[in-house]
Image (cartoon, rainbow, N blue to C red):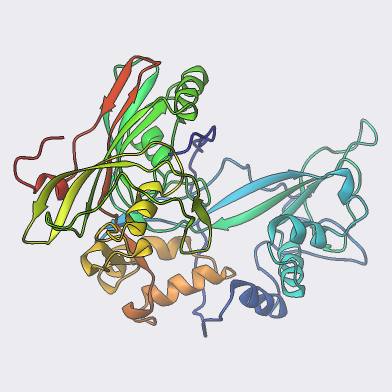
Length: 439
């Protein structure tokens, strides 16, 4: 819910397919461990390379090869058993070297920039990556006749020089998400687009890829232009999402949110009977901690809760929530502190409901997606090897990751008094089951 200026660039799509020509012999505990094993078995494969003495570049085809265009990525949506998958694809990132990197070996520079734990194993991984052609270099021109293009490196001990630029090719594996798609509810406003975000789908995932709300809206719904989100919703939360069509509209909405002038309405479902007295207006000032030991709340600005309905069959109650700030997980943390967490929010003390989770790469799903995904796997990628084992039934469903499809928390309405606008989306299915619901 906190305002942000981030946005997602929509990339083009071009398939890059390599056959998976060998079966894995085992699953190692770490992708870095697998990378170390691959380096000892002959590197990362790909085009033929030659190395003479201290040669820096490799040769591909007629002349020094040029790494693929950064916008040439592959990937395809696949939906099976309530989970949305994305086939693996390549992405190329460009890094301009800073003066502080001059004189350092390229393997150490990559390790410092892209690997959180600068260990010997990480250095070995990047050395293997460089030798396999996954890193390309463009040097500054010293004369007008010098070539100014990216050429693949083969020497991980190459020392960075002034004006160097690196391109690193990554094999991207996006996280599996719920199969829901965002639905637009207001596309006539010239400045804003209102979207009903599905639960279980992140705003922007780790790789800014296709399993994110912004990419789905910009591409699947054929909006035709870049959008900017004015606030965020947690991945398991559903509800209203206000997207701006231009930067000026985005800044205006974020200014309203930052100044706490926006009135927000959420609905939540948690375990509480009508005879239980909960003093929502007497929230004690204490530090509420995230399960991963991140402090979330430390000031006495509680949300306001109003009881709506009680479901005797499920022993749950529905309440209206009016958060006053945009702190992360604000409602979820407050309800946990009050002793009434959202009923199916496991992270904050709710009960674990098996119907709220799906198994990624389950046996039934693998039968539907195996033929497509196997065409995009790489023999030199450790995550591809795990996926191959899952597709071929070598990993039991009990050992496969679980995907949360959402929690019972929904954003219903956002009112921007400074913009003279009120945006609202309908309640979800789990809320409409309550009789005579009036928000």
